[in-house]
Image 1: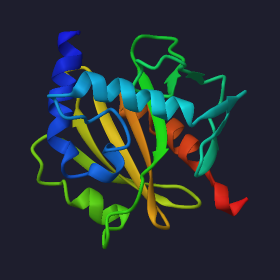
Image 2: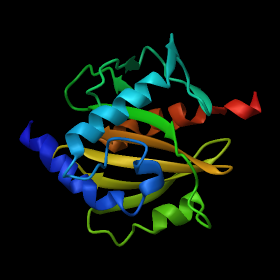
Image 3: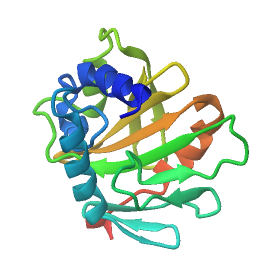
Length: 190
């Protein structure tokens, strides 16, 4: 396993306890002791629950649009992301995965959940991304010296809608992430 991947897994493990509802659904912040097997198992589950057709993505709780001119669907079960940004230059790398938590932490809306990790030493920043339908709150942490990751969380009744995004230049891709998250339609709203 690549040294940068191991470093990323160990750094992310510290955050997993604070945000287990969203991070527990995805392989991005597994415990360092069982990371490889947990990552493979959860990625396989995640990929099985997604239907992809020409940019239209359907999950059990919601659907969204990932513009095929900008995003490439990743079919590999080894990838931490459902989509990778098509890179025309090596200046920006980006991956994204959207998912729904099993259940919401009682008494914690998305903003409170993100605020609960502000004092974590691995968190380098927090913020808000507003779309027409909902507010996403995020925390950002370093995967390695070149790559950062953000976990976005929004309220969805008794669950959270979560997005994992990794990039080496969030300033460049913030608008593209906002477009992607703005396209979310809840399954029960159809």
